[in-house]
Length: 195
Image 1: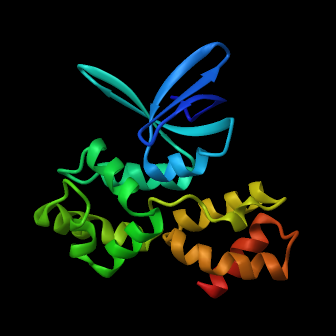
Image 2 (image 1 turned 30 degrees about the horizontal axis):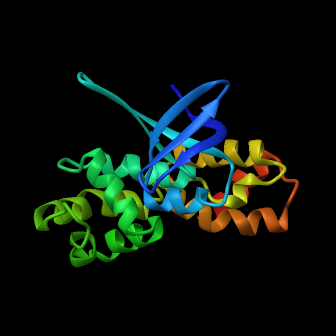
């Protein structure tokens, strides 16, 4: 599976990016969010969603893992295909989509071209709990600290104990601020007291 492609931007339009990597030009479909992020760059890292069907094979690329995770969450909804998900990410920011889902804002989601009332309602119904639990989002930046391996291990353990990523994300910064060099077991114990 391809996670990302890093290379020189050969061509960039609001809907497509051509990245050259080791003499190979990859044609990658993008959203407006990604287009805006890459506009002033000559080099880029595109996080890839590899889409394969009987009659086609496409790369969808994203400037951030966060946008790719939300895209994958959206296409998991019945009736929302890759074109509709890309249109959503081109019309609204990732955060606006999450807020609309959490608020149950049917009109906001319905404002996206190609999304009707029933699709908007289904999307909110199927994703509200997932978005509230932190699914469809990249791990928050606090986990990118020097001790990220320790934090990742503690987060995984807490998730397996049944705690949501959203709740873990809320308590983790405080724990790391108090004990920046804590071991896995110390982070878990502190988190269990706060969750």
